[in-house]
Image (cartoon, rainbow, N blue to C red; front, side, top):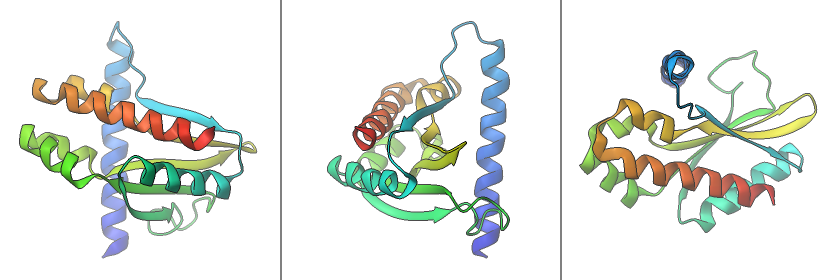
Length: 155
């Protein structure tokens, strides 16, 4: 059951990213779809730094997993997803527009590429173009929060 849920989540995120990629190519004002920051630290230290940055910004760490745990059995085990949430902010966001639920819980991906460690996430500010106008402030806030956490973890 867990593997089915993980696969459905992965495929949903892939579909969303693919849709955004097509939209971004056609859009004159390009908002990056993926937020990506390089870490000067190794993978484990970057993950530890993210845990601390998430907690420092009043989020609750929900779960961590390697992509090889449930998503893709043959995936690189050095690719991790960190799920976290500030439940009061999530509740307020959902009251404004239920569509924002596809961004919840917040998640960051940490992985190694060619010996370098990166943190990445979908950019909520790119998502707001497809959602109700009521969520613009929420998406901006979440995007700023992601960048703040990424920057704090890589300082």
